[in-house]
Length: 118
Image (cartoon, one colour):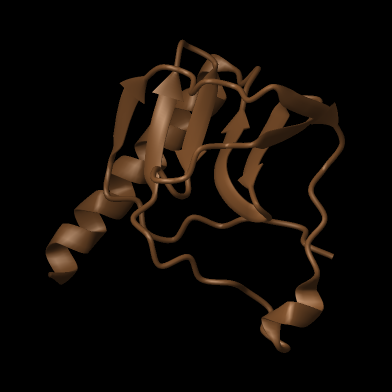
């Protein structure tokens, strides 16, 4: 079972708008066949990942900006967009001001560490 998504490299973040939602939206969480991952405990996504803050209480993780979402699954404050079984983006909304500030501070810290390393 997939239990978490970890962003290990965040080049930076921007402020933007919510992507267009497809016609197909249903309640639930995506299911992944981890057997297809051939024993790996994590799956790398080799595309640049964009982090976008939406309004004042949401963060959007764009996994593949070239894919147009065909379906969105939502559960409470999480929306997960997919296209032909591949993830497009992930939106977490209803975040507190403290959570938004913490995310921005962590991204800034990661960016500073990356600049020192390279």
